[in-house]
Image (cartoon, rainbow, N blue to C red; front, side, top):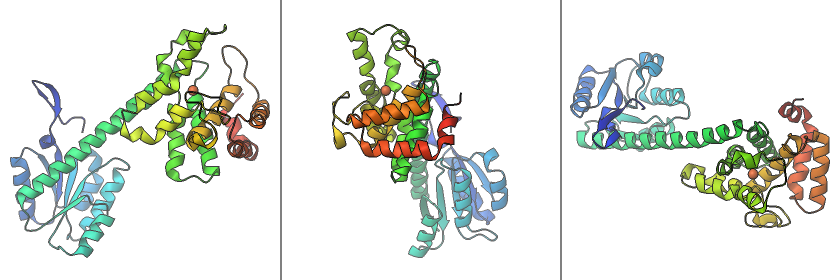
Length: 341
Ligand SMILES: [Fe+2]
């Protein structure tokens, strides 16, 4: 709803009342009544009697919410609801169904089709408007959340793109981590967590000056401490977004070590969140294979050997390293594609 802004003396402000409401009903009288009520409240109304036309032109019409009659010839409101939801993909698109029926079965069918709310005919216009406003508010909040999350991801990629030594590092860590997570049999939610966490794990480096990150000479203690602060800095940046809550353990704990020798908290063994342990192995592996200011990169085979030795000396979770090596050995093409040349 990026165009649904108007300017108040206090600055830009969203007005749900300026939203575009799609109304689909096969009866002219119903369409006219609904249009009159919504327009009186300042909404912009797209009224249609044709479900097929609506589906064909939905991108162009760009509605913010739909009010659909359930009983329509050709295609029911349930089916139209399902198809509209599909056409918006993951983006939240609120749909309200208008039904003459109030049986539980009909509501269940509506919920199965993805409807967000219902009202029955004859409808109470105040109740209808309250439901519409509340769904539009929800949609705006979701848009803002998505936008904030996008900004943080873009920020992470921009920070990385500026550094020739770490370019592509986060994407590779993300790909390796999610592969290992699925080999460990983790749930989709946890796989997504390491995938996103892999992208964001080093976002705290935004607070470290490039000169320090690129320094070839030995770092001073103060500089080392600055770099070692990046997991906590990243945690602080991302904790403000509730949608990133699951990823916080990855960001904060991707430098912990199985034997307790890592940072920031010196956590040991299973006290380190599993998602953090997965990303830490992938992060270390990628750092070894990549060229850094102070050394050339190792080959994949050399890096595997080093990780194995470090596991034997207690640095890594043995189970995760076992799956990691299994992944490298069973799908060497996937790994080589990540490290061409
Ligand atoms: Fe890091």
